[in-house]
Image (tube, rainbow, N blue to C red; front, side, top):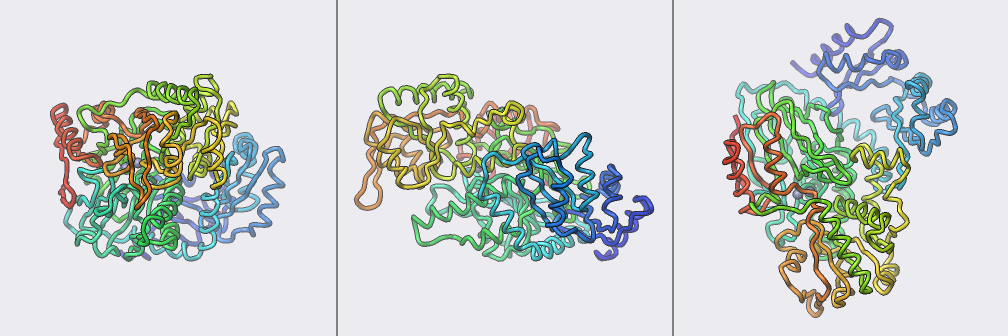
Length: 630
Ligand SMILES: [Zn+2]
Ligand SMILES: [Zn+2]
């Protein structure tokens, strides 16, 4: 059946379901959604369950859009007239692509009204679908720029979504049924994550990262015939925003990829921010950058965001669902349902199976699951991390001792994830008088990353959300935190009073942390506290191993006399015990488990331990292998 006939058939089905009096003028696939255009959006708004019924019966994600959207300026005036003043509307963002208006307000409850009455009134007045969000307490320039950019390319994007929609819903032509996974990186190593899922119909790439600290094998095997030419790819799916999973996505567009990138909304924003920073860091070290900010924008233009739990068609025979992975903001386990009940495979990305200050533990139950690719960063037999509380106590101890002897504490951390966990621990430490009330300086992109965290409170765990919203105690807004935004201020921090400095990069391969280390490294009163994983080949790992003189370029050397401490329990990864626990709690129990994203001995050890304990078929794949699942 050609796509026009398919749409016609869907239109007839919809007409049978909707009550008479509602006219359906057109139906169209846009990206993974089925968009219903109508002249009667108000009647649609009156029938609260209609969209749900359509979605269930047609097994599609449904969006209803009025044919004529009211002029945004006039609509804005009407919204402000309907909503009581004390709601504190701070921004209205009209998105013609979705027909939605995002109402940003200090008191979302007032915009919604009792039992949603105000919200329904808005819909009736203006036709746009209102969506209410709380005004983020810290404004993120990344989020603002992305929204503005997407608005500026809305026509191109609409054309792109329509083309993708038609491609997703094309007819399945092959009679064969098979499923293969090709490993293009991240096997028996940490970094350059890239896995290709292929069926007779479609090809999906999961992640496309770089390898931190690598000078030679930094790129996944993107040139092999299985994936080349890139125009044959249906979709790219990102588990999370860390660079070892997403740094090289813009490169795909340089090499000819034209399709969509699926991620959660926070992953889209954080990955853009980190990619632009990655370009900056690379540019400082060499004159060969892999891509430019143009390709980052191309990636933005092709991004499609999905929230946790939304089952979405991404190819004629593939449905994707994201589940919370507990690792960083927006991190997801990507679950793929292949064919009509043929096979289910999931990729954990990086995940944490323990509750942290920011996130709930990773999801371990799925409707169905036959094969699992799981990370093994801490998969070795002895990779036990201390409990979170122990890690925090150790941090408090090091900070207190350093401050007492007049020193400064440098904490290198990823801008995203560790930084916010450590910020929250230190804020509580000061509040409960476990450490002296010193200033905590944030250098690098940490503040911007924190702002993105406060933009998406629904992705934080409920305790933190309640603390922020119900009790009005947003720990991120503590006066202890000071942003370092100029070289001058950095100089002052270096020569000033005892303090704590949280700064990027997390593995000491570039970034402002190098300035601090150069200046503060020789003084033994200071300390350097590692709170995250240090990959082989990075300066962080070398210092952990005991290097005390670090050559920098031709003449310079960094002398390391300061105290070196490691507070391992802050990691966003599951340790050995949690990895084993996760497998024990998996619902349902998979037939096959592949251990990836770990040093060679760790992936092998974890695979064999899982087999011994659970008798599940396990593999510790090499790069460039292809496994047939069915
Ligand atoms: Zn990660
Ligand atoms: Zn990773």
